[in-house]
Image (cartoon, rainbow, N blue to C red):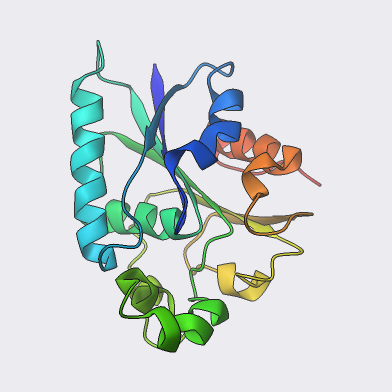
Length: 199
């Protein structure tokens, strides 16, 4: 048995990841969808909170999974990288990032002066000096990046990650890339083989 942990984006809830859960379960994966208060703290604090929730969810399973994969959307993708570098779940498998601001996001830079005090995690998603840009990519971890061609929140070039295994673009905007069937198909392909299907 293999498990997939789903990590939602900024301002969303675990329910936003239901479209992915609906394709993962029939494919044979045990799905753990983690909710967290994405507005409430800086990235390292959020990462530690999410790690504790994952550990509790894994401990509650009838048997330990052979591998634990991580799939994140936007901020959730950055938390997945933080987990891999700082507090990985046991038997960490592959990571799939949907619309990840790996190089920060121009949108975060734009709204930071307005919302930075209310939304501390925005500070970590800026292009200039955000934590997202400085998380190391651990050796031996396969990371697949799925970018949205029509994403106006996280641009294509902002999804780039040095050390990523592969990157693919789908015809999608940012907020609803989880509903995109091609994104779902590519997610399943990467979780299974560690590579994306040809377009």
